[in-house]
Length: 424
Image 1 (cartoon, rainbow, N blue to C red):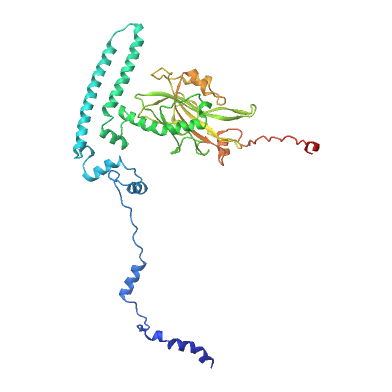
Image 2 (image 1 turned 135 degrees about the horizontal axis):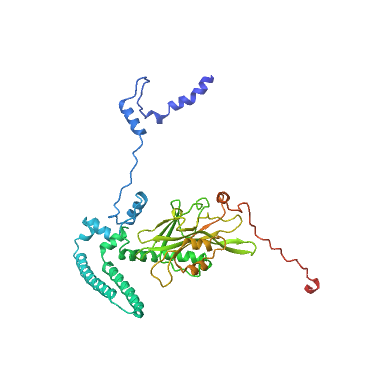
């Protein structure tokens, strides 16, 4: 009886009219292998699709914003030149100087004629300079002769720039980053590009963080600087970890005037606490002289300078004691010539070591006035107390790694209860 009660739902399901219309294939049980078609189908279902490779784009012919983003994201390349130039090269396939456009070729012909006129003016100016150099004048007129020669040299450099400023091949070479800094035109274009944005950012940083007038009364940068620690570039005013700044950095100094020159590099900290005066003082973390730079020789490794002839004070790690705010590390580039001088002169390192051997209390203003130097560049990074500062100070033998500064608590004034009768 119990079996019949349990089998009734199964019997109802079998007698259901909705299932009578279904005709399902009957497959008997077997121990043989599956069909070849089933095996192949299963294999193709489990196989993963091949990974898609991003499309490679040519930086010389990409013309859309989407293509430029893909080029930068996938290939880590920047597009070369303007979109108009890339579109012209994509359509024609010819070199940039041979594009078959009548207006373009006529404009190039006009620029060639203008350049020929400038070259003739350069030849005439050179002859005038040579004639003036060979002229014999009295001692009283010698100063006027030097001033005249300097003016004519400046005019000659301007003519060299005007001869190539409109050449499309020169602009293309500069945009591709292949310009020769020995030529005046590429120095002029690089200087104009630096002044358009990067120099403004640098002026903003040193003004906002009061490097001027805390370190020097005024600085007008004419050379661009780039600071790097252990191969990592540091932006102007960026915080640098104490373990990274324990080693001397590399400095890239790009000047935009022709010729070689000697410079002095000083790293000054104007935020050194002075407990006795309840204020702040100065400390020199690095000082080196007689460093030669040029428009093509720009790299300066502060750890590989000659100790006897260049280094006055070796590199001291940048640090800030616990409890103190961040401290500014100012990197100042000083030209070894006076305000009106054109040629740089070497400096005797032993003389500086005898007078400026102390790091603490080093005032850069006095040093610049005494040695007759001219500030031409500046850079900046910041340091603060972190997990590695104590270790850096111990390794460098700097005392005070276990000292913590705390803000002085200002006691409130005693509360004086007023007479209640005055409020009635």
